Image 1 (spheres, one colour):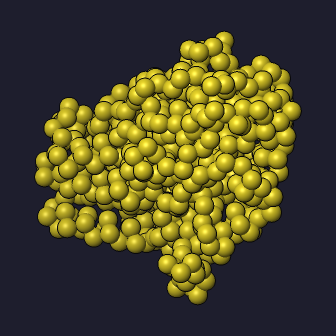
Image 2 (cartoon, one colour; image 1 turned 180 degrees about the horizontal axis):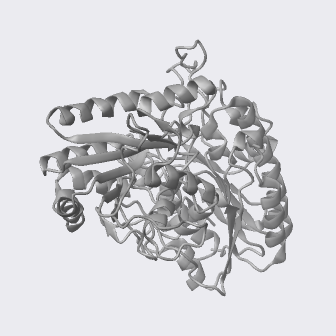
Length: 548
């Protein structure tokens, strides 16, 4: 049996947020001019693989996301994700038995301070779940906590674009019950998650400045309630989605903030996903802070739902133990003498590094790996939906042709980042730009004598509208198709682009040995085999098998 051996690199191209949807309405993948993607899906070995639910270690019915997708791709196994561990900690009551919760409550009882909760304010369950927060608020009441303040980060990204004031009404209804019994529980501040606080990878420090003013200092624009803030912002800009709502502070009749953070308080960030929670946590807890002139922050007991940065132990106090995995594909490649090149725009750089590397920060080898983090072009991707795909491709083509690397990983963010806006025309442009980039990458792969895997981590841009079972769009109250800004549960493509003699040495399997469907956890073993290496025994099976 002939061994698989390439002159050029094995290139893993992740088209982030590009799923498979048979319907054309609102489907930017079908509506865009994507001749290269269409061609390779038609003419080269291709299989649809699962990227959601139990196939990636999420609860049944839970839609996949980039964090989980890259973690599972890189680790080669399906393991419990943070969301499952958090759900279990709540259902079993362990979260309240741990040292962190006990200290969080004891702190405010000893100091007379306030217990603050901050996090993504929806039931989208991609970054966090407001249901977890509501359970903790109820438990705080049970344990005699007098004052609670909640800082809400409006979603509109993993739930419908304009979900408010539904969630506000739900929370206010619960808080009113506690207040009727003599508690002082209130919403204290808020913002759209893309406007303030939950910046990703320090790509926009101004988001943290706005969060500092709204949640910590209590100096943002004042309103008497969160609902008044949202209604006012909608009157001022009828086109603004929840995720882009400006920051605000809730104030009393004298204009004073009702819930700024002060010495002796407790602050709990309820997100269970790390990438949007690290920065605020670092701002609140780190002594050295180089990103902007932060000034003094209050001395609080700060805790996260999980540990958001395992290397730097941020935050120091967590409610649920972190998840990590050893023996991932990237480490395996380095141990086998393969030089690696990894690149993406900043908004997805952490996914191809931290998450793909098994929730580990940094390189496995400075000598054997090169990472490129291309700064984001704009915080408003619908204005330039091509993002930085051309510049990213310039770098990638150079590295493919250089002969220096045997393994290359790239993520094109357009399908996910533009897809989250659920605007048809920008989404079409985004897919067209990605297809142009893909054509250039594959040409370079051919010239170098390499092989490329073209795939995605989850769906998004293929459904810009919520769809009925017959594929027609769901119509909203305004008579227009209801925009879908969240990810989808659709399968994703897995294509092997190989024009070398090696293409005849293996075949792509259509299903697993047990008859089940393939998923993202089958990628690591597949890449290893294309390197001519025996996959690790603990990994899930490869999508390919040798022939001849």
